[in-house]
Length: 300
Length: 301
Image 1 (cartoon, chains in turn green, cyan):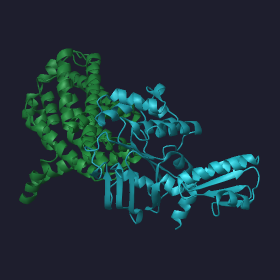
Image 2 (spheres, chains in turn orange, cyan):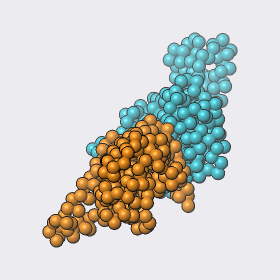
Image 3 (cartoon, chains in turn purple, blue):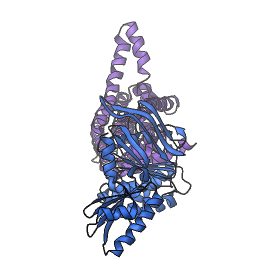
């Protein structure tokens, strides 16, 4: 009970500390600019598609994106784009009812939130071990609560950044597009934010692991980002081996892929289902356990 | 003798360098212990072992009756001021202390934070970010973290480092006020500072304890006094007054010796009267040998 209470105190302190530092705030700003910029480009792309659709249908073109959303969503062109985004036709069909911007926000979130989470989390231990500031907490509580508390703090920070990104997307959607109902859009963006955040849980844990391994925050960031990018490369390699490799290679690839967050990404596109979120949280927990074991034996 | 802290044959290495080489010492409960030694003697490493920041490679460290550092057993009972640890600098001073007080499991973290700030006279800086304070003030905040919640055992590694003379004097008063309430271990290479503050002294050099004991024992304060006079005196007169071998005279300097503290006090009273009757002023009296001299004797064998 005491340990759990310490985890909560440390998580709160970690989040407020991160929000007071320029590094974390710059990361939130970079994430928001990335989300906002890509959303703006996507809105322009929607406008382009609508103009093309208007030409095909022989109707008048509109200047503001979103005026032909109804027709666009029902078109084969959109269905093909959706299938490309989510990697499966069946999944694409399930998403037709969701506001276009929310689908895009989910997609961008799956790409960007893990990068943000890993980079921010990479600082959570290394920087204080280097300055020895960690000693003030290490004297007063166990090392595992420190690791868990700081991870939880970083997850909170990722949630804050994700929500800020969602707010920017909503703002752009209502300002630069027509045809978006505010309430359904806001709810769909919240849903997309939660899914992107869940996908970032293992990446954040990987950042904490990197932070527990090295003393320099810069190296921890490199390791963490390398880990996130590497997991995509590993996922691609596993899929290739599974599809085209020898039987033994396929078997190894199938076994390995389940410990990669990307293996559970499909589940996050499904409207419901708890397996993928649960697996991602467990994966994050397992990675953080390694961080806790390493941190417990480390000189401070 | 009850001890709050005991090192038994503790060894700690960093690569090929041996920082502690079978260190043995005790810190009696309720005393102010001065841990002295030159730079690199192993004082900071010893403190880091007590705080659990490092682990010993051999030997045992007994802290408040238990083996080694255990954060759960020692929660709120141990305060440590690490020497080189920077404070998290973005938070207001008060918020940082409240956070640490919560982790110590204190029932009233806000009250404890206020009390610690009061002790280091920084109450008016409660709302300021740590990073905006001067070096000396940050040092005082760090001292406040160690005093937080009045732990049973407090270790302060070079607490006066970076403080101006007024701040150092004020902190010395605070620490002296803790005598008898807690066990305080203060490390310093400033031997005068330790001499002014400590009841018990531990001298370490090259990772080993070279001598430990009460300040009175180590400096010989109970047996020797050095008098500095305004005029020279005749040794034969003093021999007649105090007996053979009780004094050694060198110009205006007299070394007065006695077997016990009471005998030394009695001889001092006699000598004072005799000097007054001859209009010789006493310009200074120092009891015992300086800690610096004792340390040099012990460290060089």
